[in-house]
Amino acid sequence: MSSVWGNSLKLSLFGEGRGAVVGGTLDGFPAGVKVDLDRIKRGLKLRQGSINFNSARREEERPNIVSGVTAGVTNGAPITVLFRNKDVNVPDHDKDVPRPSHADYVAEVRYGGYADTNGGGHLSGRLTLPIVFFGMMIADYLEERGIYIASHIKCIGEIYDEKFPETPSAELMDRLNSAPLAVINSEARKKMVSLLTSLYATGDSIGGAIESVVVGLPAGYGSPRFNSLESSMASILFSIPAVKSVSFGFGAKFAHSRGSEVADGFEYEDGTVKTNHNFNGGLNGGISNGMPVKVTTVFKPTPSIAQPLKTLNIKTNDIVDLELKGRRVPSLAPRAAVVCTSAIAIALMDAYLEGNGYRNGL
Image 1 (cartoon, rainbow, N blue to C red):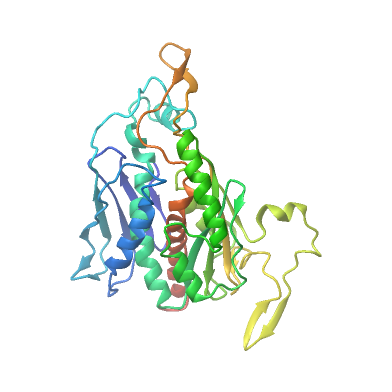
Image 2: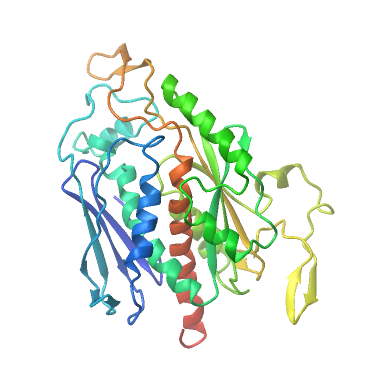
């Protein structure tokens, strides 16, 4: 099982959705950095989401830092954080009847019937807790160096928010980073709330997309080929359950464009090399070019819905009707923004440490 990510910075995740704890260890983070627990707790609260549209499983989500931090300051050792689970070893489905669009069946096959799939097991969304913990800690570190990250809900279903401005203001990014429903346009927010309310009432769900932006990242971070900044960000974003697509800049629209229409010409302005457009989303050849980095992450509809579904009983090979009990989430998008921001922060930190190592120190 591959639960370790990174190069200069290494993140490992552990635990199961219904196990005693979930947690993570971050190795390679610099010593002497003050940990802003207030910011981390705000991020964790955003990940938990609004009680109106998200999981009714209201864990306390209190981080327990067990190594790597002394008197609130990183000490250079690997940082380990734990989150205790409340619903421990409580079965939430029949293992002989895999839930449609969940990972129950493939986990059973991959691990020879020994996989713990209660609450999603090791594939549970609970394991985004350490991602948010470390992501918020790293975002704070990067901001002190002029690198800012924010995300908003690009769309829920067919309801779209405004696009990010070419270079978002600090005020807008701060607002989005503290909003329970991170949208730019208030009318889009109202429509999204109405849709979520309707879906919750009918027991259905819908997909969505998160658009993230990085402002202030200088040119020259990332490496070509197998360690590109794009592949690094994509790989950690794909660790988030329900992510089905990650794209950069103009993304899938490139397939329908002419080269003459999407050229990012370089120019010199106010002592800085820039591009006259930003179709490539701040990246060329897997390396940052100094323009805002733009990433879109697409989430599928929540597979646990309160409507009857057909699936297979793998013990009898009969098709059966399945009615899932318990918690319902009409869309993952409302609480996914902070998770995407956190994952991107971790990827940027890995590139930042690698890049500054080549420059003889931070």
